[in-house]
Length: 305
Image (cartoon, rainbow, N blue to C red; front, side):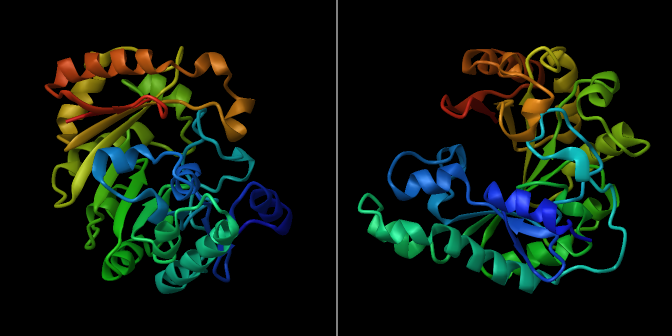
């Protein structure tokens, strides 16, 4: 379960570093991790939830795998695999150990940067948050439960972002992530099929089952909506109905960003302004009884609670 060497080289050229023997897990340092080190700003997750951007490990255990080919995804979708096709995969401890090492190697150049915060340089050697959301669908990794448990054992906070297609795997998690996200990017099945482009049957039903399951989690929960102008920014009342079904702690409404391979499918015209995102989020919030409590204009994202 891995990419071929040409695919790996292409991704590594863009900043990915693959870990483990089977090359299905990878790390990529976030823009805001790098910015935080030189005191040029922090990720909205630091502003919203208090995680430290310079100690955040952005990774995925299932880079090649996803059941959807979303128009707005930054991945190169030509190599998507919808399921785990064999029993070969790396164990969680190996992935975490090598992911931390790879992150440190990616950031080692900052030790020679006069503008780097010296305290942060020491702290980043031991990351404390895992953003399990880099690429692919993390719940397709057969040991996702144990991976979350491994991070928990090391006192990490974990932010797991899922498309909600692996209903049973989500439902049967024994190790709760710190915050579980479900992506909700369409108000109805028609728009869902057009923008998320599922490659499996019953995808809309799967998502709805996962939404219904969300309220049973002991962890914090969040619905994430990626706003694509001209594609899915309509029917806020329908989004609200789905959100009420899930009863999440938070709702993040965020602009599509015209980056990576998504530029082959969408244009800058599909990237809403911050004001457009904020206005749409307020309409959703009014319909489901949630208030706008935080925002990050530079990231074009708002938080409803």
